[in-house]
Image (cartoon, rainbow, N blue to C red; front, side):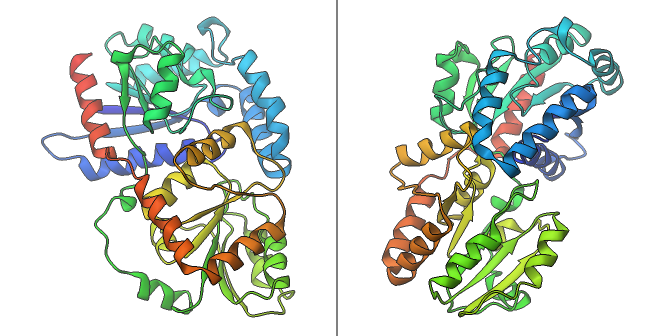
Length: 381
């Protein structure tokens, strides 16, 4: 079975799912049933104009998230991939299809449906076209472009997003609840590697551990959050993730402003996120679907960083958590984080309750079942 994954690097969640498909294909492929996967950054590879739009999206995410309300609503009105004849770079995509000849195409981005699907069906009439949507809740913030009734299937991460797709006219017979499409490491049998990882990072087992996360684009407010935690006189250790932002990591590694009892560990890009979350008492992250999905699977209590405002795509994640009975209090100012962490340190029972609620949100379906579904669609095509 040959798979082609269409993605784009707006934020980090789309590419996270594309990488997960590659990892699962490698894990599930056998000599009897080989699986080959190719990835295509559909927007960036189509035209410089689309590439500029991707860069603008990421700049807004890093600098002023509130501005995404303007950008999101503009894209809702003017879909860049609505019609085949208006799609830039379609000849390039046609050539790719002719060369790759995939059996199944998986779109993991709202803007790699419709025109891309129409071209694929014209060039390869027998191809199965599937959309995997990692969003968690409907309403404002859930792009209508995720839903393409012309696609063979819509796979949703949660029952709520599947219902949202149905309300946007996706045929119920073509909707499947698939759960979270994350790396196999988040689904492996639990092995207690915590002592080894703590030792490697020089962390103390009896000290509250806070994980400061960052997105794929290195968007973070670590220095401001650290200053607030330090000013509150808290005793804890902080793992600050900087992604591929080497300047941020170097700056934090040389951070000299801490005067209280805080141990700081600044890390660059890591692939052992499941392990890092397992040794953390809580994690601070923007309410993106990727990181939220990871926190749910590891049972790591999530503190929502909304400094600079909440993007529409993030707001539906907040709504999902609140609908599931999670408090989901947003951090609007650095001192909000200091207050929340102080409460968790003083009330371990509250921390345990938060962890239990995260675990309760784990979906039953796994990516293994999604791949079985890909195979079914391939055979039916």
